[in-house]
Structure formats: structure tokens, C-alpha cells
Image (cartoon, rainbow, N blue to C red):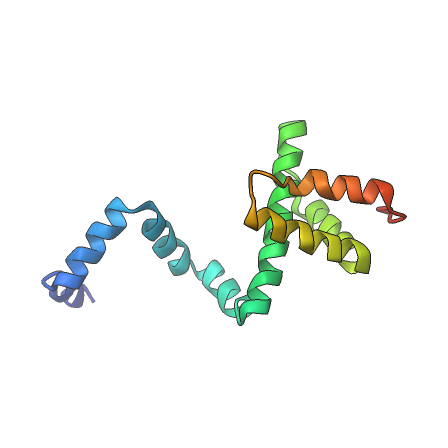
Length: 132
């Protein structure tokens, strides 16, 4: 294995790739996350086609929005079980899931103009959906 790495170091693509990883944050982050076994398994399972990618991205954005909002208001991490419950509750209801998907997609188009958490909070407060 070490001999193979030494052989690769002689080739231009290897050297250039190393330079790119060292100087480009996106490619450094991409190479690190794609080499992570847990993420790679997740990626292979849920990033199958464009619809699956969109749905997965919605869940990831919701998860992150709740986690960040909780940290902002309490200075603590939101427990993953509570976060999972909140997302599950929102996504199992047809009206709130439709609104959540629309809100996240809008946020992806205009990240500075759409606050996912605030939009969902307003929608839930005026709808008949309650978190029980």
C-alpha cells in the first residue's frame, strides 16, 4: 500500500489533486466528507436520484434549522431525539410537510430572505396542527 502511494506521488494528477485539496476549501471538505464511512453510507442510501436528493436536503435543512435555532435561544444543543420528533411530526402531516418543503426550497433559492424556522413557526401557529 505504501509503495503504491509512493508510485502515485510521481504522477501529475496526484500532485495537482493534493494542491487543490490544500488550497480549495470546497474540494478539501468534499474529499473529507466523501471519505467518511458514515457519510458515504448515508450518501449511497439516500442520494439516489434528484427527487431523493431534494427530499433528503429538505430533512437536512430542517434538522439544521431546528438545531441552530435551539442553540440561539438556549445556548445548548438540541437533543437529536427531540429534533427527529419535530421533523417527523411536521413531515407526517400533509399540510405542514408541503409547507416545509416549499419553505426549504425557497430558502435554497434565496437563503438570506427565507428563515426556515420562522416561516414554519408562523405556519404552525395559524394552522390547526399541534405538536402533541
